[in-house]
Length: 429
Image (cartoon, rainbow, N blue to C red):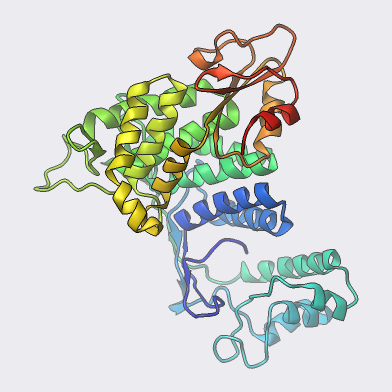
C-alpha cells in the first residue's frame, strides 16, 4: 500500500510499528526524490510514487490539507490491517501465489507471529525472477498486479483509526507540501505540483491571518491555537520552495511577510535566536528556544535557512547576517554532535560553498526551469519570469524573443546562455 511506518521494532528492520506519521512520509519523499536526482535509481522513484499514492489515498482531506497519522491498530490488534496468512494469499492469487509468497517471504507458519505474515522483500530480485522465468521488469509487473488484488481485498477490512487533525502550518503540512514539490522537481509529474498548490491554497485560506500571523490546528472547519515557531519556519520554507517550482512571486512575497511577522514576534535580538512561542501569546515563566534537530529539523535551524534564502532573494543583508549569527551561536554544538544539528550543517554548507543565483527569463522560462530542476543542485537559488519581475536579481535580464539563463554569484553573472546544459557547466557542484 505504500507509505512508511513510524519505525522498526526488530534488528533486521522487517517488523514495523505500523503507525504511519505524516511528517515521516513527508521527509522521506524529499529524501528519495533527491536520491533519485543524484543516482537515477528506479527503486527510489518507485518509493516516491508509492508513498505519495498512500498520502493521497489515506492522509489527504478533500480540501487539500493533510491529516496527521494513521494508527497502528485495528480491531484492537496491532498490524491486523496489513498482515496476511498463506491461505489468504493463495485464495486471492491462485496460481500466482507462489511467486508472490517468495517475493514477500510469506510462510505457512508466519514470518512474524503464528500464521501472520508481514510483506517484506529483499532489494535483490534477480534470483526470484530467474526461478520463475521472468525478467526483473516482468517480475515487478506480476507483483504489482498481485498487490492490487490484495489491496482490493484489504479495502474490505476495518481500517486503522485516522487522526484527522490537520496540523496546518506546523512542520507536518508544510513538510508534506515540500515533499510534493521535491517530487515534482525530480520527476516533472504535474499531479505532484497540483497537490502542492492545492495544499498551499488551503493553508492560506485556513491558517494565515490578515496580519500574517498563523494558526496551528484545523479540524471540523475551524482553525485554532496560535502558531508556534515551527509553524512559521516550515511554512516559510515551503512557500520559498513553491516559488522555485512555479516562479509565482506571490509565494515568495508571502514567505517574506510571514518571516517579517516571525521576526517581530519571536526573535530575540540579544541572543540572535527565535523563541518557540510568540511574545504576546505566551504566559510561560520561561520561553524556550528549540535548537537541536531531531526527527524533524529544529525551528531555529529552519528559520536560519529561511533568512539566508530570503536575504538573497530580496537583497536583504540584515537577514543574511542574522542567519550567519544564528549559525555561529551553535557552531560548537555542531562540531561536537553533528547528528543532532544536521539541518544547521546544511546551512553551514550554504555559507561555505559557492551559492549561485540562477535566473531564467523569457517565454520558455518554465520549461527551462523544469529541465534544470531534474538535477540535484543544492547550492543554487532559482528565480525567473516571462517578461517582468519585482525582484532586484531579475533586473535588466530580459531579452526580447529569447529565453535566457543567467548563472550569477553575489549578483555578478557569467555570460548568459540559452541551454540548460551550458548553465549546468557554469554551476560548480
